[in-house]
Structure formats: C-alpha cells, structure tokens
Image (cartoon, rainbow, N blue to C red):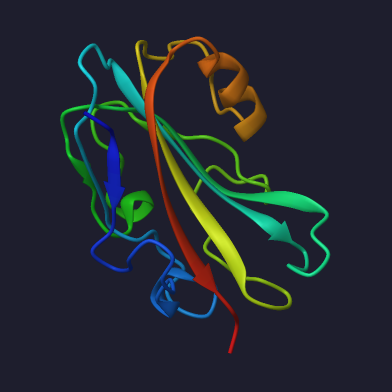
Length: 157
C-alpha cells in the first residue's frame, strides 16, 4: 500500500482554485488521504512553494502551511481547516509569514507549483510546540513510514 493524498478542489498538476489563494478567501482546500501505513501514530502536512520568488529564477522554498499530530484515522481535512479547527490534538506550525495558520498561494510573478506533502509517522509530537518546517522535518527524521504529495499550480490574474 502507498499513502495517497488527493483534493476534491483540484487534481495533481492542476490549478489551485482562486478561493484557496490570496486572491480569494485564502482558506485551505479540502484534502483526503487513503492507504495510511500500519503503525502510523500521526500525520504531518507541509505545503510549500519551491518556485519563490520567480519560477524562472527560484531562490528559496516558501512555506505556506505546517500541520502536525493529525490523527491517522480521520481520512482528511475539510475546507478551511484553520477556521473550523484541527481534529484530535493536531496543530499548526509556523509558516514563512511567521504565523501558525494556512497562507494560500500568492505568487509575485509567474505560475508557481505548490506541494502539499503528507507524512505518516510512527510517533506523535508532545514537546515540539509550534515548529517551523525545518524543525518539523528534523523531528520527523527516522520516523517516516510513508509519504504522499499533491501538487497544484497557481498564477495571479
């Protein structure tokens, strides 16, 4: 079995609808997952953009969303997970706006790729606080049982 990540809002490689961007409601899209590996204690989610600031000359990967301690049996997150609250002790980490919430696609120039990355972990985090992507990735090292990715694109109109 392979961990699978999908969205009812867009297909892998497709355009992220404007509602989920800075030009819309700036809310998180609905996400669903399946085939969570046996032994998974929690899931972690990272949304980032490796094309910042310009896809023709990328200089950094911009982090839009970090979520940890998602229960493995919930099957997904509803639209606007920040607004409706995270289930079962899950919490947001810090994005690159230094906020613990979802920050949607908002590319300054060109069409960017946005990677939703889901990790199945053999542990829950009890003392990590509100981690950055780098801190979460360091804490996950050696604990990843499976991972999945969903990529969407967006260009401001």
